Length: 402
Image (cartoon, helix red, strand yellow):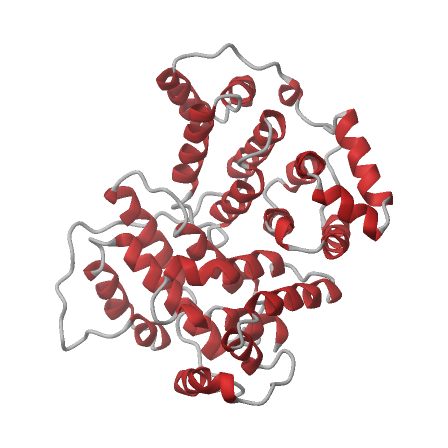
């Protein structure tokens, strides 16, 4: 799907020296052309991933890297992209002819929105492709596309919200691109949606639960003890403020990761859960009813990780908090220790620390899930706010650097 112009600029980027890449990246027009070309070159790999959750996770990681391209030095970005491209599934040999459709004639926005929604539900690529090429040309229509996609995918919990993770990373990497790469990415996202199995349906109870002081527990305690009645009772009690409840779930999962680490298991499902919850906080939700549906879907998935044992290889929360309070007066800690992120924040060196983590990830061949987690943890403090916003860098330390 690469146009001649896209192929040319990719070849220019790949063959350039370090200084040549810096000059190329500094030019805003060239930078936009590169971003569009990277999206186009990703499309055959994304299409070939079909319903393979592992392959789609690598796509999500690549999108997360592209979304953060502007914050990385060009030399590091180039190396990271080479690693990601080598990890992607083999590209599809043949792509559907619909991807080469001409844009449809514009219609009134409400008609376009209805036709778009029906094509998604019907899995109708032949109708969807020309419509998307047309809607992507108009700012208001493009906004409708993004909102409808977010709302349609948010509450599906298959593979810890993989659909939403893909949407969130693609949105931030491609929402402002020209019409063709934007539309092609949207169609690849929908192809994944159509191919992936549906998540487990979750019943959303009506109304709030009353708080029972005899059984009331913080979410973290209820999860640690696998106390489902206490956990769901707490979620129901928070149900009138579903986004606040999702924020609390996100912080709870963060603390769970810090306490238990990977638990000796494949950390990828836990990473996806963390990234999904972080992604949900950035999505538009069309109604209280839909936001409650998203909340209970996320809560049911989170409970699947309940019952861990706190690992003694890391300090408890009070020790972490106490170190944070005095970090500015402490000696420089060892690199990649749990103290390093807190010390960097206290020394106003947080951005440099995140860049060093990115360099470490590339040196380790970008493990699956790395870029999605790196990006989400870096933004998580602004998504959650509050007195615990400082804990999120510790998630990356716990799962990848420890």
